[in-house]
Amino acid sequence: MQPIFLKPVFKDRIWGGTKLRDLYGYEIPSEQTGECWAVSAHPNGQSVVVNGEYAGTMLGDLWEKHPKLFGSNAAKFPLLTKILDASDDLSVQVHPEDAYAMANENGELGKTECWYIVDAEPGAEIIYGHKAATKEQLTTMIQQGQWDELLERVPVKAGDFFYVPSGTIHALGKGIVVLETQQSSDTTYRVYDYDRRDAEGNLRELHLDKAIEVTTVPHASATTEYRTDSVGQTQVVTYVSNSFFTVQKWNVDGPSSFEAPAKFTIFSVLSGEGKLIAGQVSYELTKGDHFLLPLGFEAFQLDGTLELIVSHE
Image: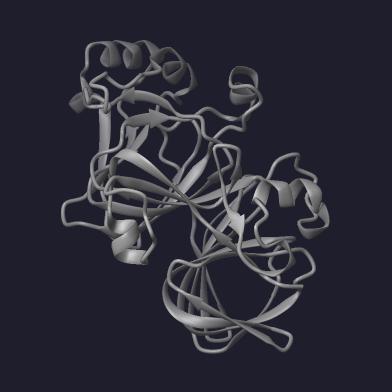
């Protein structure tokens, strides 16, 4: 068994910038690159295997044609890992849950997600939730553009973590880089976009009816209890573990031996250098690498000084 290293897909965004190049050395397509779809089997942007016998294969094809690598009964690859560069404010938005998305978005999954704040400029903040007490009040405040009164703003710093369930009104503010773990979905309902115009000079589309329908009212902040464990020379912080995903941060500071935590596991290297050792084979790891350990990858070692975000079903 080999780890499966993946080449990301990059997306231009009106709010994007150059930090995906500046922080990770990626070759980005433009000076407004907003998204790195690092581990993705979604049709709107698929990662490609770069090593081993499956080199050149899109992750979605690997999932469909070689299910033995994953051991999952899900019809679709369930997760999507991104790195986002919010050089400007993102639109205020909300995502549906599974049943609504299945019925209204051609069988798409819902979108529950979470953010690990990789980098944040001084004074950076996110929008997380709203102050409306009822759907009627939410509708009125949106229609009247009472954004300052409606939206909850939260200051952030590097190292913060936020769990964002479907139905949560949210937005990244300018000056923030996050690693996002989410359900494999590309369904977003825009609530407000600061009256920005696209490259053709048009106001960007809003989706107010659907957004109001799926927003949780009243807002309830999603709190998660972190758990910290030690494995060898590695500190493992579990941020969230539920039916959607488990997301952890592994701080590696020397040799550590592991058993595979799940049927298949996703790794993203946030910083540092080190190596993954499986059997007699060593694989170099560096900042910006993304890889999967497939089913059957039972025992392995990590060594070096590394920060990783680790996720699985």
